[in-house]
Image (tube, rainbow, N blue to C red; front, top):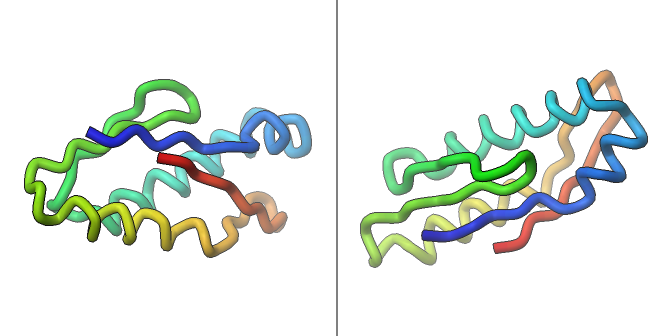
Length: 88
């Protein structure tokens, strides 16, 4: 099990509002689901924390690298480009 925490969400929430911050989280979740495919199960623990269950130990590092690659890109909410940080 890996816990993923999204950082700077409070700052983003303050800057763009609750609705836009929630839209950002939905975009992040969509991308996470796309990159993990069938190699892991994604669950939400709190507003900015998620859990990945990776059943196959041999794919563990590959899944984490794919997840990390998501945060090299910006997300866009209401025509505002946003960057988010993630920690495992």
